[in-house]
Image 1 (spheres, rainbow, N blue to C red):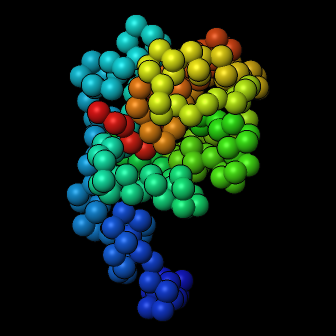
Image 2: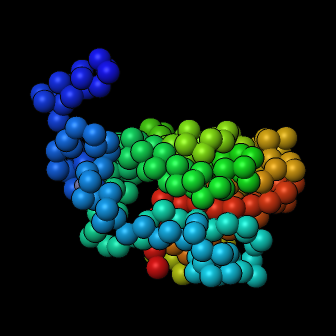
Length: 232
Ligand SMILES: [Zn+2]
């Protein structure tokens, strides 16, 4: 109670802003304002049977993925783009952690918690990691891990070489670019386990596919995927 009062008191002088629209948060709101909470473009794919989940199709014939999950739809110039921009380029790791906690709570309510043994974020190359100071997928993994709850590992997977920027490449070129760059650094962490592989955005799925293939080849029993947002 005292702590709640103190938080409200401090908020008078240092109001926290909504991570999506920047409006000042009021008492009882955390990370996102009530309006954004209500209006963000949630996919709710976790409520659909796998056969009806449109994201599952992206991996059909390529990789056996049990659940393909994404919290939000990525819309250009929308609030989701703003959230991801803050997470990736403005040093706001809290955005990833908060979204991970919110989504993790929903997945737990849907009864998915017992399915996953370990959360593994897609790793950044160490040069990029050094430049940014953090991996945005780690923040999302940490948030999910708290809410599900489930353990997570930033060391299970690693990148083996530098990849050029993905943005100007065709799908085939992207695939060739990422296919050989991931390896399981700690096989004992993944053998026989259902791995929830996580990243910030699902676009072509090439990076997630390469990571997933490496995890299954190293002995993971089952693979699921979760991202903050998906481009359609
Ligand atoms: Zn808002």
